[in-house]
Image (cartoon, rainbow, N blue to C red):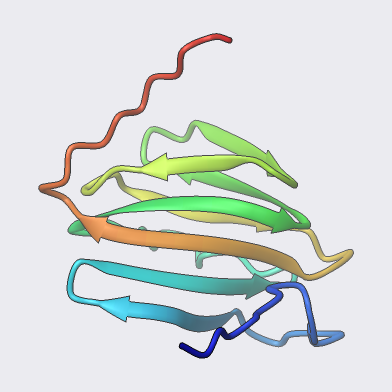
Length: 120
């Protein structure tokens, strides 16, 4: 079996006029994307309201996710966030100082997702 090595931080463009979505794995039960942002945000009044769960991990840069109740979560390198199916959200900010690199994992809403963490 041939192994394909992929570094999600290699060959990043110096500037992006629009967000870039790269599908890494596409399967009926799972989709994994690398998303690149450079100061972009979801247009005002537009919301994502997906039929599937989305788990995101910020690999580089900084961003904020806004929920429909106007609360926000700030994300920095290494932060992850679960956006359950039906959770209205938008990207309210990404840093213009560098490319923000997201890893997004999408999976069916009927998969039970554990969201609580045990302290170690």
